[in-house]
Amino acid sequence: MLVPTVHFMSGLPRSGSTLLAALLRQNPTIIKAGHISPVAPMMLKLSSVMVEGEYQTEFDRDTRHRLLRGILFNYYGGDSSLNANNLPVIIDNSRLWCTRLGLINAIFPEAKIICCVRDPVWIIDSFERVMQQNPLLSSKIVPIEHRGNLHSRVDSLLSANGAFGFCWRAFTEAFYSDFAHNLIVVDYDVLVHEPARTLSILGDVLNLPACNYIFRRTRQI
Image 1: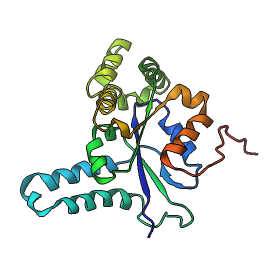
Image 2: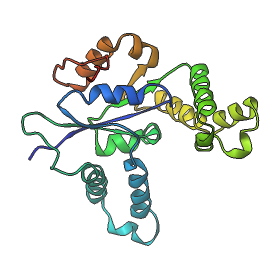
Image 3: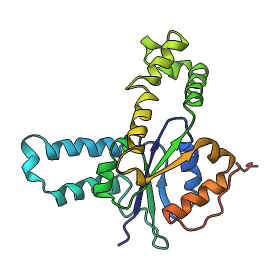
Image 4: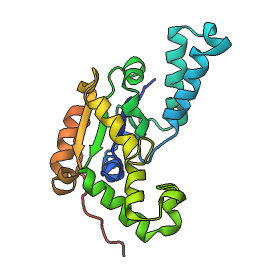
């Protein structure tokens, strides 16, 4: 039975992770890569059950690892998506992964974490443009009580629990951690200006087969 190779995607918001995932999905080996999934919070919830409270004595190390790995594999459909012609690859996306490198190293020791990054000034600018263009959706980015003016919106984004602040703290912790060697940092500007070079380097690091990626949207007639 083929077992998918697992990698992860994390990093900073508004930094190209959606674009990169869309490009990677063109590679037939990659069976799953896309928007942020609930796999990470599901693992954290189950971890708390297994290591805290009255049930902690019911789980040994092997059982914990098997159950946590099972969350990811079952979320992505078990064996139903596997292609026998290639070694399948799953890339799960969550901002939480930068805060859980130890967990990743324990249950998926061969995994890499792709971290998309960008100049923070342009990230904040991008958030502001989104909020100006979609005022009814801005509450998902900045709470309504902090949307009164630009300064309060920026303060909210930069706060410890803000859309940017949390990710920035998580990424810098990961970058200077003992597991930093597992990170693959992808700069937004390099990705959009040199996509072929970026995908070539990623392919080498992730051991992906060669693929003729299409970098321009084709016109549909």
